[in-house]
Image (cartoon, rainbow, N blue to C red; front, top):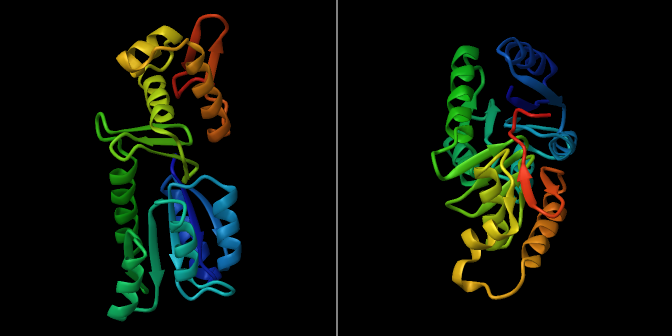
Length: 223
């Protein structure tokens, strides 16, 4: 079930959006100003943000700019400002769509569904989505709850290998053979070091240890 953050100070519009989105199967969180919106984004895990421009405290451009410094979560601007320069400014901040008020709720729902299909559907072999984690093999980037996590190339490759073999135990020797190949001449503890670094950077307990054997990641549907 996809989660959407609505940052909108008009409470009538906010409630209308929340009702339609909830009835369409989305989990909805709301915020009434820019500061509250940023705080909600930092606390939660969202798949898309609906963002008004004329917000108290921090306007929509400022909110978008702060979020874009650490995440490419889809952002749709909903605003009464319809001038070309205002729309261009939004797209310069890498928003995904710009919708002017008044708008059709049916069209908005279709656009949201299309954006989520595009961003959350894993392109075979290039992206993996696992619970709160998204790994992009083409860019060698990882996100947790919409926030980027900086990994070394080898750390990413270890994580990718585990994600590609969910519910299977990979021994240290298997990981060495697959990822280090002829470049490695040390001992197996280098794998342990990379696993330790991954756990620390990801701050989630996805990687399981079978003592004396190796490592695994459970299938996403397991609890």
